[in-house]
Image (cartoon, rainbow, N blue to C red; front, side, top):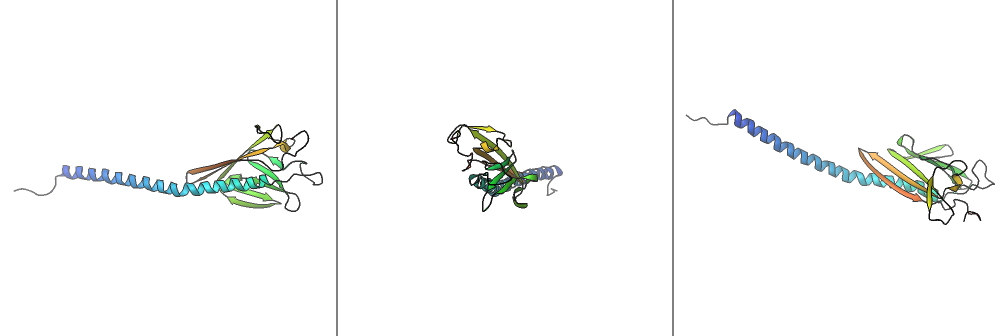
Length: 188
């Protein structure tokens, strides 16, 4: 009499093949999901990085020079303080004010008159400052400004990096302030 069914070896081999095929299908579906998530997340992060950089760039472009009639500022400069991670820009909506841009703890923010506006989180801000031999020069040199050389800033390199869900996007630009450095007969 003949028995119907599978032997233990046949069942084991069949189960093994089934597990391998199912694992392969799961891996393909999982990788597809990761790609889809990256394709939808990365553009949003890139837009946020560009928005943060352009927010700062717009204030740099429109920075106002501190004049001798202003108090508590660096005369003939568009900037009060400049480090690799923060920048204080002079602006004149009605009277001269200082706008401090930074990203402490990953929060990109602007402080004006003690009021802090936080734009977004998960941000790393890196700033590079440039000086030149004259206002119309195309040859710029990176330098680290201090309180006496901050008025020589002719360009600012801005790099904003944002990391969310293990995905990082960056945006970089170089901005030339409209009013800095002050045009003089020795610095044309």
